[in-house]
Image (cartoon, one colour):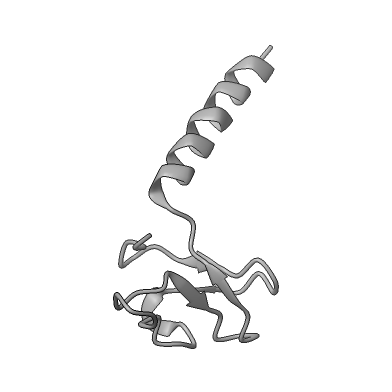
Length: 71
């Protein structure tokens, strides 16, 4: 669930874009050191970051859909 260093995270509540370093919480909780939560510095909303696997499948389906919609 790690985000790339240059990649921006978008808050689903307020649409604020920020990097991992700018987030409002440390993100190090739980027994194993990383809970996977991201905290928006704009509104304070905490959410789970999207995994690379989910992003991969979403991008694949979006490409397929775009090809089908082309005239």
